[in-house]
Each structure stands twice: as C-alpha cells, then as structure tokens.
Image 1 (tube, rainbow, N blue to C red):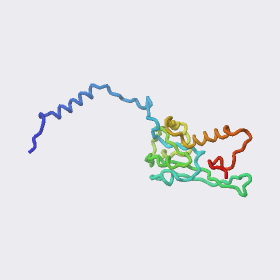
Image 2 (image 1 turned 180 degrees about the vertical axis):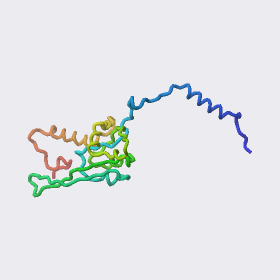
Image 3 (image 1 turned 135 degrees about the horizontal axis):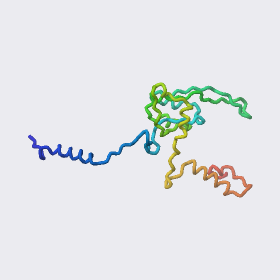
Image 4 (image 1 turned 60 degrees about the vertical axis):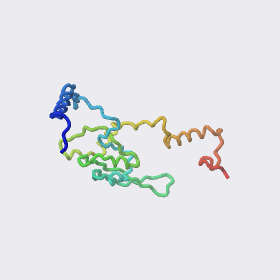
Length: 193
C-alpha cells in the first residue's frame, strides 16, 4: 500500500485559500449594453460584402461547408468599342447569407479571389425571429463601413510584389532621358540581340 503524503485536510485548506484570495479582489464587471466592449483588432463578427468587387464566381457558395450563401445573377451584354461582338458579364441580383446556419469559419472570405467579402467586427445583429438572420446584399454592404483597414506591413520586412513593381515603374521613366524610347526587351530585363 502507498502512503498518503501530507496532513489530513491539506487540500481543503488550499482550496479555501484560493477562495479567500478571490473574495478579496475587486470584481471587474463589464457593463455591456451601456458600455461597448473593446474588441481585439481584426476580430471576427459578421461577414461584409463589397458588391462592386463581386463577379458572381460562386466560389464562396461552393466552398461554404454549411451552404448558407445564396447567390443569383443574370448575364448582361456590354458593348466594347472595336470588338466584333458584345461581351457578357454577370450582374449580381441576390447575395444572401443565412447567419442562423453560418459557423463563422471564414472559408468564404479566404477563397474570394476578388476581395468582395470581409470580416467586420460588428457583432450586435441578434434578432427575435430566426428568419430575420437571413441578410441580403444591401444589409451586408452596410457593414463595409465597419471593416477596419488592413494591418500595416512590417517596416523591416520585404516589400510586397505590388510595391516593388510600382516603384520600378515610377523609377523607369525618370532614368531615361525624355523622348528616348526603351530598346525592345529592355523592360523584361533581357538584352537586345
């Protein structure tokens, strides 16, 4: 048989000590509806939609594990000057998200290739009826005003590809004398043959 180490009732005394320490501390109650909570930066609340960027590619609806995104569209012909025939483009008619089904995984935001979906820190959208949790594109568009700007790049890190390309294009005309055209192949980094 193994012997117990310690004095009888030692666990009870330790537990009471924790209770007494907690009782002597001042409580920190947050007065929630009266005082808005300080949310951490980039917190996830609700999904916002930038309608102008949506091309109705349907990636968000296809990748959604809950099937809570509903999209309808129609094709519209656009006349392009100089083209042989008019082109077609998709026009967004309906973009609804059913937040009663959504599990806030963020897959739709990640797979959107045109940056039409964003996380908004807005979290106060409770409803009395579950049917009212189906939000349309107008309501999702209103939440774009609450989307925070993207975090700044690391000043000690490498610049992004877009920044280097823009800097190179801005420096290229300044390096040539005015009126001199670049030689063929010079912009691609190759030498003329």
